[in-house]
Length: 257
Image (cartoon, rainbow, N blue to C red):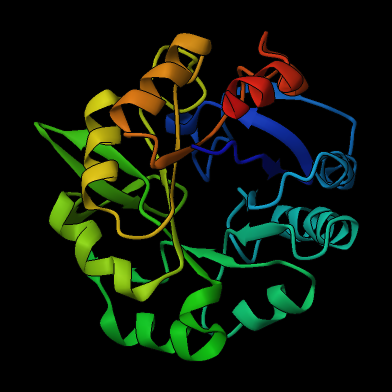
């Protein structure tokens, strides 16, 4: 299990939000906001040798706020070239440009899911544009009934695609990594979704990162146990960098044990 750093950008600023509160019309519930730039965090991660992190542009593509997000993200990729992935508003048409800015991978959800289902043609175009080895599929999900449904458009829209072991097995041949936010737990520091983590461990044939609900070291232990030490983890609001109580050095020591 590895620690994966994150830089979430909203309105051009580094923030931590409650994932399920994100709305195009009304902003989001914010847990943390800082005047430190995305580049500042990127430099910190580079100094600690923490590659494989995720830079997520949270505003809708085409909005003035997205342009602010993009400027901040560009600075982060310049500060840590090849060390961070780019997500938010990625399409087959612009994916290569993010790699040109210094991103190691592009992270994609909404472009690949159309009318509630996996759009194979679009997925193929993405793979042709950047290569399978530069693609991270974001399969973030929300629970409906007893199932986990992949959600798109900044986690606001449910698809018809259920995240099961079989879904992960099928898509493992189409990407280099998966990123999965448990959206209903995201930003709440109220505990991780153990069942979802087990599904990720059992189904994924490629590296997969879980995000959502980590509040303390007991949650990290749960990720390690339920994920059979095969599921990586990212920590947002609980990390001291973002106003929480978990110190980065302590987390890294725990990961090394």
